[in-house]
Length: 99
Image (tube, rainbow, N blue to C red; front, top):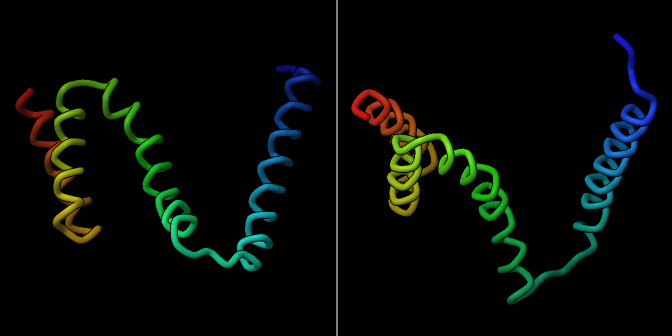
């Protein structure tokens, strides 16, 4: 197996940029004072990223996964995190067995 130099350099460059942005975020976050709309926007980032990661998989793998994702989203508004995870796992297992 041979390694293409261009591919290796691209991977190393992407790793360096990822590392630098993560470290820079830690240094910058300590100096920011967020209030009002900016704080609300920053608080919305983690759920938005989570939905962006989960939604394509949930909506392209089949009906059981799509319905289970909807059930889990509804449960997330009413239940704590561990219970929501349990509902999500149980619903996808049951729906895969039925559908």
